[in-house]
Length: 324
Figure 1 (cartoon, rainbow, N blue to C red):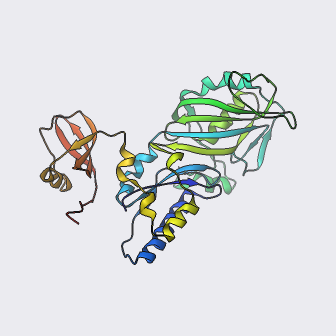
Figure 2: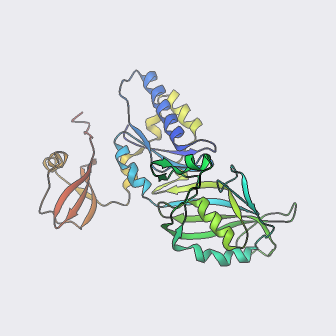
């Protein structure tokens, strides 16, 4: 029970609530199977209740890698509705600005390169950022002025996937060579590959403003977080069903699934023991950088190699079946 469950988080559920659902499922299975061991649980990247999609849930020793998931790139699909800006920058807030102007698909496509690459953005006032020890959203809810400092992020890719025209009853059209309509839009759905720390709601706000109007997010779905995609994501219903059948383990991805981009470093049992004791291995002929030290197929530690010296960054308290 050391690994990952990838949830397809539903609308209206916060990340912390999703972790609670995972703990509840583990408790149901433990009671069913008569076990006693409790497992640490954490998530690998906050999703707002409005958002749906990929939420990596770390279990057991995989929780030591949750921080790496927070630092990983993400891919989102999101819809910007034009004409109104809300205080939360999504459909759950109250309208604070309006505009009659509606952009065209050509204008949208022309503006997106401005938001691709390294950019600066101000996070939403309704966010979990700490300001003088208080969450920004708590201050905003009290009606206090919240000054959000600009932060540097990177938008690796930004592209439209669907346009919704203004005309009542008009059929929405997708991007591509067959698109012929160039009318004004009520909304646009985009896909964005972004660095850590990127706020999609802020990106939507700034794109709308650059188009000479205002807007807010009406749909936000994370389709990838680090190495994890929707292909391996499960619903809460499937998680509950697995728990009641004692089959959560069959849904889990291994701990190493979160380390697909890290090269492996094979170590001997004696070297593995030394690393578990926090000792430095020397004289290893391996590339500089982060590696996953493994004793056979057993993950031992994340290690940093420099000048042939191997130092532990994060150790794993795992045992082989023989040791167990």
